[in-house]
Length: 138
Image (cartoon, rainbow, N blue to C red; front, side):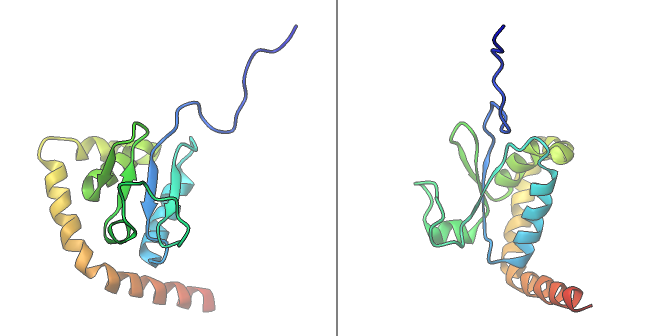
């Protein structure tokens, strides 16, 4: 009797596409965490610092590097805090955080925090890079 089941390493439902700055050590560390916790293998990660990165047609390289973006499976493009909430909702260990982020008024507060973080990101990124270099030498 033939086996009609279809097997695949990828789930039937595609997940979000995460556009991240791979040249930023802080960003890479965070993305590595999400990648490890993506037990369902639904996420697709695009390093926008790569010159041949397959960007969403609505994203310029400059815009992709300036803010965090996530494209949902239905094509909706989100940025900033809304993008993080979308990402968290797709990672099992972070779904509870996504639920909090979707409460009325929370995403705008997260966006304010994200906008406050953006100017200090280069400094934090350099600090993470120094810490990683020290760790490797030890």
